[in-house]
Length: 286
Image (tube, rainbow, N blue to C red; front, side, top):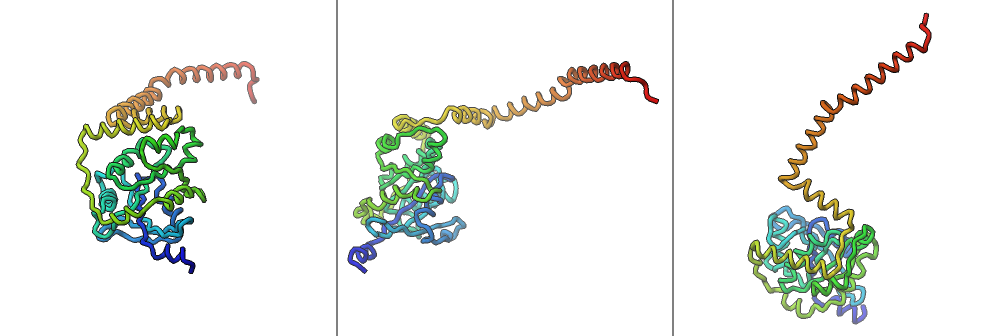
């Protein structure tokens, strides 16, 4: 074994935690990073799945410990999955060390929903890389986004990834491999306090910050999808949705039992006229 390889093996293994909202492609990216070098179990005392793997840096030869955290929309947990993800990120979990680096996976086709978690993680002051996943799908569907502008607006590295394509993780691997871990590894034992419960004013401020970031990044949703999103907001509204359903059912009832009479009369008159015409044209049978 040569000296660089021996030094890489002897060096402490930095811990990376992948975090993101559900269905952002986080687990697919985890599988792409770790390949077969992973093990699956449950967190102690609960049925929440815990996934751990290993990533070897292609440049440094260093081995990284990679944890796939449960999906979470926010650091204010509403489910057990979110509570575990929050505790691991804050270094407060009983069996999991605090991560040296957070990799926040975001869905490029639904960036508005994902940015709230990114901003909450950024406020913790921990090292973070944003993995802009599904970048190819966003481009195919007509989304516009300036990745460099998004990086400047957030103040953290943003790298494009395509978790379902071979090589789609290469930019993220390079960013991880070249990240400086000296000070983070020394501060691994640090425990952070959970963020206070957000008030209505805090939530509104976060939404304003999300809009600012999207504006500076030039994020644009395709017109067709924007219209469909507005329609969904109306149809799925707890008040407007049932009212629209009642109107549609009423119109269907009217169409079947009232408005159908005129077409029925026209059809019956036509059939009777055709019958009378055929009776006059055709000779009587035997």
